[in-house]
Length: 218
Image (cartoon, rainbow, N blue to C red; front, top):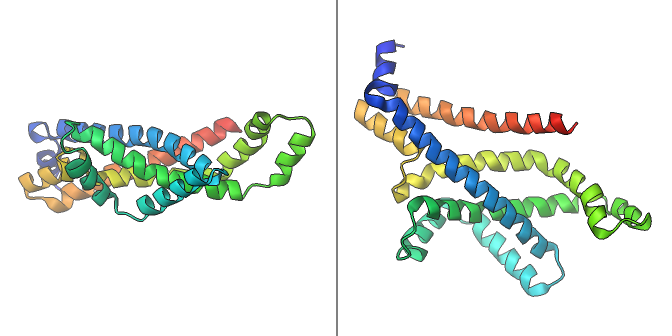
């Protein structure tokens, strides 16, 4: 491959800075949505497995609707509909959208992980004098984290990939930057391949971080 062509696509006229800015926007949206979505997902899971029926039913309906809806449609609904007159920035609306979407997946992930736990161990801990909080923190939570880990890291990677649609609401993220450069240079094959490599690098960075945390835990 001609190095001069690569320079023209990825470096000339500050293209690499534009790509870095787009990458930063993608990382910001993904990270904020992940944190908020995980917290909301844990809360939804608590309602979903609880005994208060109105909250239980509301959580079930929310999870069913959001998980079954395309994330792009949800983004457009919130940006052009719900928040159209609120003056919120597109990035903030995107964070809210992906947090809500991620929460539904995290809630179901946590619920299925809880169902896979051996309840006898919690009962044994309670028999030995552990409080409910101690039993949850020392018995349930470590096992829950172990069971949920592989699916959760896939959810994180999926979230990064989902954010590639934010260009539909005027956000200049990594995907939109790559598309703009491809249009300007008339080299879509090389440019889009470069963008895919960046997304792959992000994905494997996530897997690497999870692997490091697992080694640290051990």
